[in-house]
Image 1 (cartoon, rainbow, N blue to C red):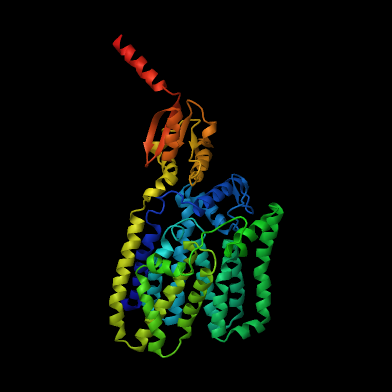
Image 2: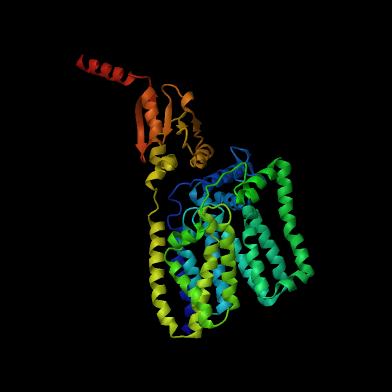
Length: 499
């Protein structure tokens, strides 16, 4: 067999390894991040202990904040059994899901274009977009990596239905939507209108609605979803009310009695994609606008990506906003860019060289930024007080200084607990039980682990401080003593030395 036949396969394999690096390099260096990842980690380690596969728990009580079904938690528990109670155990599933997303997107764009380099371009854009790999996303133990993976599979299945109209794709669509709900509740509902509009554009919607298998598939997909929510309500009465307030329409429209979100402008996600989430690649979106004019028609493959991307962004822009909500838009926009390049080159091959130069520059800048992010993971200056204790507890040298009875004292206002996973892991693996205390409960000779400057200053007002170990900004392991006790100890020492 001539080597030319296998050269594209080899190039794709090498290319995928290169673009995968920002997803897994030093993935376990940073401790669990606030908010969702650290909460998910506690849910996972408690399920690891209790083997209660139905109800996510926090402090071994039914979860009343992170109300999503436990699909991600199941994967994380399995990973903890393989890698141990650490960051890799929590994040490995997300890394795998992110890699699968890249492969599914490659397969779909290749099916659309039959050009491996166009398909690889789509995957490259996603892998090097900050909206895919940064905090809360592809490298971390939040829901987005799994959700975007499921969405990518859904795109593939819907496109396959649109070109074949085979019944199996109807059932696979229903199953995939069910998995998306079991991953992150109703969020898939923001994707479905775009799929509907594409099938309407593609003149497939009437055929779908007239097919009896569509309704059988709806029942097939609804059964596991309704079964889960019914069983969860039985195990945790009031769960459905919390889901309504914190996961569904009251949350979307910011009318929830349980949560209040900051109000951001309608342009929030568009500005976010432009300034940070696709910082360099956003310039290539000009090709998306240019493609239909050069092609002198609206190509259905181009429409597949553009209709869904625009619809999705308009929908999420109309509700409450968090930066990670834009993650599913990244593969859609990448698909639109790749298809636009394909259409432009196909229409005029001379465009290929002119397009390749700026794309190479954008690819280089984007990859450099993604690689640097993975290569040099670190805390921002304002994050040390929040994450200092986590760093302390995952460091063997500092951990050696911790004595039985050590307690964690946090700031009254900013006392968040992303370190709770480490506290539970230490108790489970080493029998070291570190409990949280409050300022009004402490007493002289207590050993405390703190991370806020405000806490240290308050302690100094009432006690003498003997620092045992210190690191990471204001993180300190210390013993509190009665006022003037250190002076008395020094005086006794000096008197003894004089004698």
